[in-house]
Length: 303
Image (cartoon, rainbow, N blue to C red):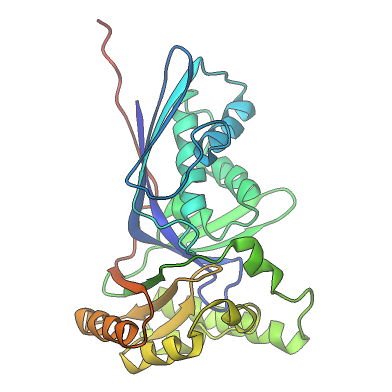
């Protein structure tokens, strides 16, 4: 039996559209083993409708690895127990993809290096900003070329925490992509390059005073704000409550704020704000996951 624990991720991080991402200590736990025949998929701790047949995302990810290494399992038992909310901008699909691929890699004899897993996962997901931190942990800068996927992971100081504010509704990634323009002004592209660079420098150096500048964005958040109820008011309130930098996590609708101290005070103020304004949101204070996906294997004893 193979056990894989994969962290939630938050991508884009404001200015780093499709490039920057971090891993958070919220997890999808997957168990998989080869069985004599058939496909048995079990989902625990989820109110969502998750396919339990060949359409299942974990199973499809596993098959990509099996096909890559030309391994055909006799049958599979897959169990998923995830704390990552689905379709909320916290990398739930990437966690399934990475978890499935790592499990399949172990079952088939550990033939693929992590670099190849990253390439296959990024291709399946369409971009690497979530699969990178899901696999390697920490703060990741990722890119895809025609021939390879590059991920650079940096471990972030643990005093920086993350307030993750999750609404009770979802925004489909496809819909969130549809509101984006096909072209952007040259000055907006330069704006994002400079601000994403500042964000990287701030996180790597620990200079939290520059985070508010680094998360500023002109490529996606101004267009996606219409998909989030109370977007402007929520962002303003986070800064009033002590956020060092606030951005839309992934394609949303989750909103994330950097914090350095006063964590419980921030959580309390945001929960009071949501309640007073009839917003059905929850606020979690999470840590960086600097480890990434963890794989363990337990061998069955022959009877």
